[in-house]
Length: 529
Image (cartoon, rainbow, N blue to C red; front, side, top):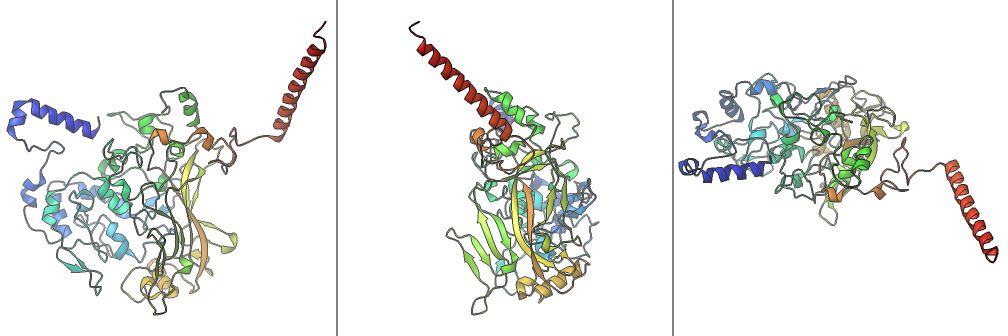
């Protein structure tokens, strides 16, 4: 039963039963605990770890569960090829890597104080409970240590910008389940800004209408992230590092142990999702080749927030005649050039590109050979084909970039970008210094030479599901130049044709026409007989 319906039913029951209605009109129906009544939280807190220590007096196993998750370690071992992935290890074509940039990046870590390799991953009190369970909307952490401000603080130091203090006691007493807001505080803003990275996740999903996402519609189904991305033992399911390209399982049933990924469309809708209408059988026949998202997410970045489609680091570093950084915006106010980052191409309502995908992904990691002469370097190469029996045609955001690499060592690099020190690129605009510092932090060699290489990164699109009335029609794919025009290995009526078959078909049609015409002529000539 939907959450809104359940609350309505419970409210009606409370009004109908005198014992309930008269006992306490302020009874909370969506939780079994009022944390403001807990003695452990009725005190002043001077740091985040103090709050965690109080949480652990009741939630005794929570921190140890967190310690086992990818949200804590930022590390994942790819089960297919044993690559060591996760935010801690991969290189992307946005802000490239976290290696020497943890002061900025780790504001989205579910811990306190990760700025370098000395961070204690075994400490239970270093776990940040509030970043996921805040319900006030006031909780935030500062760059340079990932600590919440408990007093008014100038940040960055020397900037004159004051970050107002947070009342940790108020936040701690109002904790609740995770929400689109808490998950989105990091995931909507990945890559350095709202909607930058994913394309199908941005701040419009905080309270979307049905047109933006039929599942998260705030006045409809109102799914939270955890509705699909369930988290037994705090381990959130559904990961792009070990994706499910083709789920062949049935719809999940409550109380039954299910081995397949509960975040797939099939886990709710099953293998025959189309139940009604004259085309239901034919549409269900498509599901053995097409991911549900291919038809049901016709465009991404549909909520009014643009996503970055291209990022050219090679043009970064230009300054004004006065020696100041430059910022250029398009007609809609979106940044298209930043001296710190280079040129951007942003877009809204983007038609995806399409590719066979079986869930396997191979990343180009630090130390892997990169040769500019070979053309485009794939940040993440997707596995999949029409013939492997494990692939579906998926919609993709393809992020294209030009990023620094070491032409002598033939490797991508991890530059030091963020920081208030002389080697941070955003401070001094010197690639050689920035890359030397970043590679040293990553314990990797650097030749001292810098060049730029073209890269592509693939992002499977799975959010912003449109209402069924807005799903793609037959003509979107079954036509020359249609959506799937570049997808190989499959015969699509309306798009494809065999020259020999076409010739024989036209000859047959011509023969029939000639035969009918001859028959008609003979009948005409013999009409008086």
